[in-house]
Length: 355
Image (tube, rainbow, N blue to C red; front, side):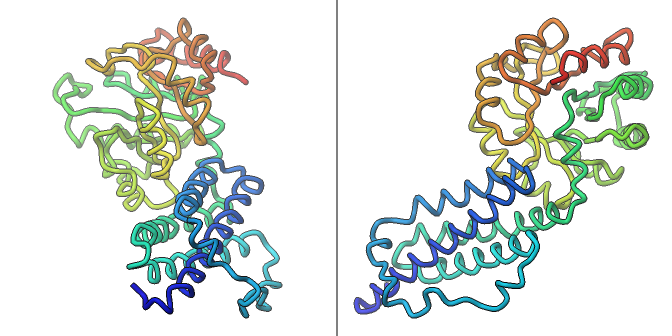
């Protein structure tokens, strides 16, 4: 605790830096909203800003006394040199990080929850800043293509895996997930090995590249890295997204399976690029898992700032109900993998999914 005579100054200092951090976050948030059209980044920045807002108590605001603050209104020539949006974004990220450090140092013993939250937000912003700078420089083709995708093919073990996926790509599929779970069988009918997984993933990645489609790997970050996949898809029991991001880097996609709204919110906070929402209906792909029904689809449609794909027993006979609940994108397995003509099945689904 500071000495009693210093407490008013510390409260004013904390108030000023709470204002500075929240204002800087809002500047960056608005550019992501209006300049980049990135609702996923908007949601993450808003979360950080609101976490600070909750801790910006009346005691700090009542300590404010702008008239006696000799530093109020001071500017620097460098401010006039920010001509491009990315310069504004970089400057405000730095401003926020500096303010958070001040909060972290001076709030100890005065407002310990604020000190802890300031440190957590500062570290979260370090990773977020990389994505912001990258988005401002362009080269965000993966996420742009992801937002355009309406149909997501998830593979299952098959002796005709490559021909089936190629047919689906000819039919217009532009997002493919390679899934080969433990205990599955390889094309020879024997338990699948990592060597087979690697060969299959490499072949599918090449197919997707030729068709301009995104290719992600289920669960296995090591295989995704080995074949230079566009990203990974993680279940609730897999490695946390933060660790996946550290291993994959900022340019790759991370998807997450979710079965309830709190899991979706957590996926957004974790920086995932998209989520699966389901299973909407009972499906043999997820034996023993109860379907979530259409209510969760409606909740996701109302709240998700990132692309979501409804999944679970979806085909042409169930698609209309899922769309009526607000889903614009769906992920399927059997509707394509077990179709007599995967190309025609893909075209039919995409035709129904057109906006």
